[in-house]
Amino acid sequence: MKQKTKMIHGGIVGDPHTGAVSTPIYQVSTYKQDGVGNHKGFEYSRTGNPTRHALEELIKDLEGGHAGFAFGSGMAAITGVMMLFNSGDHVILTDDVYGGTYRVMTKVLNRMGIDSTFVDTSDLSTIEAAVKENTKALFIETPTNPLLKITDVEAAAALAKKHGLLTIVDNTFSTPYWQTPLSMGADIVLHSATKYIGGHSDVVGGLVVVRSEKLAEELHFVQNSTGGVLGPQDSWLLMRGIKTLALRMEAHEKNTAAIVDFLVEHPAVEKVFYPGLESHPNHEIAKKQSGGFGGMVSFDVGSEEKAEEVLSKVKYFTLAESLGAVESLISVPAKMTHASIPAERRRELGITDGLVRISVGIEDAEDLVEDLKHALN
Ligand SMILES: *Cc1c(COP(=O)(O)O)cnc(C)c1O
Image 1 (tube, rainbow, N blue to C red):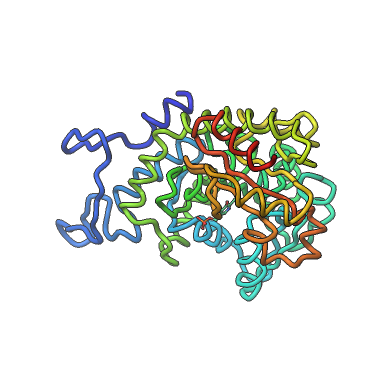
Image 2: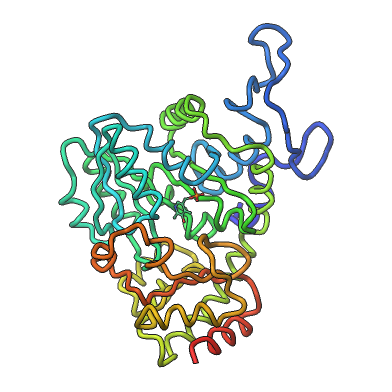
């Protein structure tokens, strides 16, 4: 089955009891037992809920793993995965990971004795140099935000394996429609389903898929013990979102290509960051490992004042954090999503004050280009 078909026919389709073609929302906490311990597979909804289970089966099929898990947010998913490790363990992460990932590693999990190092994972030698005796995992985000850096998942996972590390990939930006990290050797893939998977700016959720039965048992134990599960209503919304994920990703891709073509030619734009550009340093790797380059693009207009002017003039790009939804969004990372990173560190990473990030929606491409043209002129 191809990905597009799986989005409709994967997982558990419909309701076997009534024939309903949409999975019902089992808004329930507990389940009647016919005798002590004699139940139909569900005992208590933290441990398992039929609607959440249907979503977990679907994401498992889409990522091609052994088991899926739905959490209350992307951060709950990432934290759940990190709970597989012990005090004294060390994790290597991509240097421009999502800000929330940086925060939980350096301000919360560090207090539990889980140590982290952030390196440019697009350069394999920097990963190898960071491996210590107690390193247990490599956490990659690709493409990254806001600079759209690309890590070669297959090569990085092979390197991690050589050192006995688990490879974890945050696949939020690509989604399983464009990229399936488990097929490239990763052990765990995870998502902020709040973004493209949900796709309509109406739900917060996180998803994880693991490669092996052993990891599935361990993560289920963590999820059930710590309790950060996704509710049935939100699980249903994510399944509804996945039904159109393929169509949306293709629409994002097409619109983004038109916008990038326009931006690279515009004299007010100093630099465009997009893995689909041949000038992108890892364009060939992006092409090899992903079916599409995604709907996120960043561009530098030279100064904070100019960036703010662009933001104030656009009509169809909503000034907001988050990404991956049907409506186009615009932001200035240095002042918004990455404001918590010290200015000097931002400069090191290349996140300038004039950098504008857009999440391209599925509106008409001509309208979006016209809008940016007006704002830039
Ligand atoms: C948003 C985001 C997260 C966090 O997800 P939430 O659903 O907001 O908790 C993690 N990783 C990436 C790449 C994200 O964009």
